[in-house]
Image 1 (cartoon, helix red, strand yellow):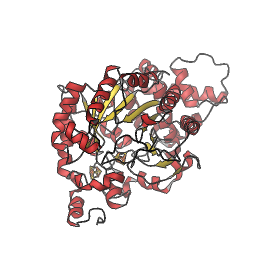
Image 2 (cartoon, helix red, strand yellow; image 1 turned 90 degrees about the vertical axis):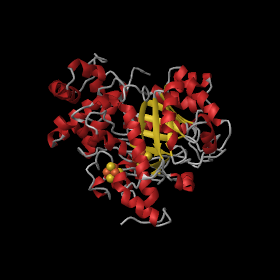
Image 3 (cartoon, protein in one colour; image 1 turned 120 degrees about the vertical axis):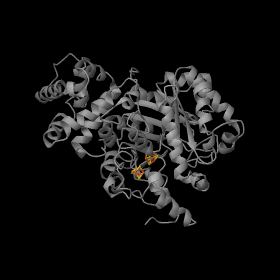
Image 4 (cartoon, protein in one colour; image 1 turned 60 degrees about the horizontal axis):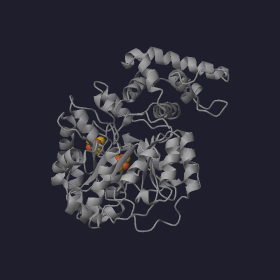
Length: 494
Ligand code: SF4
Ligand code: SF4
């Protein structure tokens, strides 16, 4: 496992934006990518091999075929020519290519362009990220749980051997990151075995957890097994958190879990689902996360009324409230005084970032310091990455192997036990609908490609993945119609 990957140092976003714009947006380049992609005779992916050789990690050329040699020369030429307009040096590119996660990420993007063409926003060859709900089992009973988790696992969850086979399959197609979630993923007895198995294959491994089971030893084990990023849910201060999570004493255990992760040096984020219940306390909570917990990131989760969340739909924010929170988060992100990175899963965050010419760019749920520093190219890159990544850059997987476009959008697309994953990813009609922004009902919005609205919220309110996200301030008219309709779930948009 090479743990040298530091998203904060990565120049990859600039590379991707410029590569796409300057070099790849024409039929000849697409043809050339097809020529260089595919596998070598030893089964290795040629693009990854080229990047490895380019960065000096391979010196032996005895097993190279003519096609390998040709492909290498083509990429070398492009990178040499490209280095200058990319604004990065040749040596820097070499350095970037030493990182196995970035090599696979770039392979995924290039293969995606070869297969789907250059798009706005882009669909990658395979999902960049899979959020894998490992189990339905949970030790808490949260009101907004998107998984309807309970005290027992479901009987049809993937076994350890099946889960490892899935990791192998994801590796082969070029998935870059796996986020284990649940239920409570740490309740699975094989959690560390699976995390290590994925990390050893150079996946970027993260875990989303309620934090209550993270003792100091568990935090250490997380680190040792190769987990690179831990996201722990916290719904506010003690009283509101315990009320929301359904069990008294949870807050204290969660806080300890966060502190333990920070102490062992794990990249730690606090994730808070923002509802009417807690939104007035968010500024104080950010301060607490920064000063007391010392986590690296505060991630504001957009509330999606799905599964158990449907029962508390009245907790959803008004568009004005959501806008206010996003602006607060963004002002903190801009501020040099605030040490914690404040991000949001609301895709409108990308719109707010782009509206501010001087602030950092934010393109989707996950970002890096380098991406945030992109200036000038922000719009191009923003439209390439595209805000909501559901079914395009990312998908979810249920404990039994059901594939969903997003864990908040529980529409079964197929099952990994029964079908070839790539068949689902390439051909499922619902994914094609989700990827076609021009048909979205907010298609007159100038930020359509940068944001796209949350497809899970659109579906939850309108039963249509191309409907408007009624939480956006630009879609307030739809929100008002929903409100006037009385039954917010049944009202159709016009
Ligand atoms: S109208 Fe749609 S695309 Fe535009 S900012 Fe709002 S949610 Fe995003
Ligand atoms: S549908 Fe899109 S914006 Fe909404 S939670 Fe999923 S990935 Fe995020």
